[in-house]
Length: 486
Image (cartoon, rainbow, N blue to C red):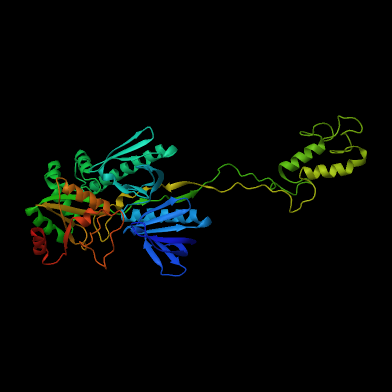
């Protein structure tokens, strides 16, 4: 929490309220509590941008155009700005329905500093005035030209990212790896659905049915005559198959699959590292065999006292420098007057003498952990279109006249949605918007007080082209026919 001077500005820049209050980020909500006044609570899904408009002043722009300006934050300014940017990015990822955990980078797009997140299924570019989702299913190429990353996308302008610095290569590798992994999961999922399909046909099918892309039934049947019917048979609920057959009599059907849940598994089964060499046991070899301490120190002390190896001359360290040099009565003798004292300190220096708790003990090797029994990776067996909570949604898009019908095949609850199809690529526009929205039902046209407001970054086409929805009941066919005729 930070104490700040706040101002509320209209879209035209006129100040309507100002004062002192507390600002904080809590549970995905930006909260301003004035010293005198009502609390302002803004979900981060309704925040269009968070930026430092001028030195030491934060500017929070809301979706409806209102601006909250915060100043005089003191030392808490940097922390509050970081928390708000993180919360804004997390809300954008939730709105974009991304799958998995992100690799996070920083760079520039359209001349603005942005945060770049690479998920399992999409690239997310988040800035103060930018919120862009690039689904891997629609990526045609990724080019790295002298630290400039260009991503070509079906149906939109290329995305150009610059100034990633020394992380440019890391970003390119991460993006290419995630795209490759996504296409590998598609191939594994389709291979599990159709184990009898020829490998080359499976490769062709996987290239068409990329994550979320709807492919016309006639195109699928060009690979194998029974391909579309088999996919619908194995993926659709029994009660949905009759509806698909009815739509097929009046409309052009396209079939697709979209992964909605991550199947990545962290590494498990850590095994402890063991040193197979003999563990040194200095101090443990028959410690009561003599007057010297056991082990290497005692051996060295005994050798010195005996004038043996390591003695540096006769009588330990003595000898060699005349009668009153270093040749006294024993090691460290320093002459006749220090003979006994020199012996004592020589014993102690070499580890002999009194055994006290303070005596140095051998430090055992640390028991570090290395290796993973099961490395991190995707659990491909978890990719399934069946069950109460499938990780892959099976769906169809049916185009008839100027309308497009969206129907989920392997879940009982979602209603049938109908959209207008405008322009030559109207079908593709709706397909891409559905992928970018995570296949969430569109809000009713015009909105309602009980319906959540459209989140910042949510594809507007799903609301702008929304016609209506039909619940699955006994009158489903009649209601859908009426909606398509209107």
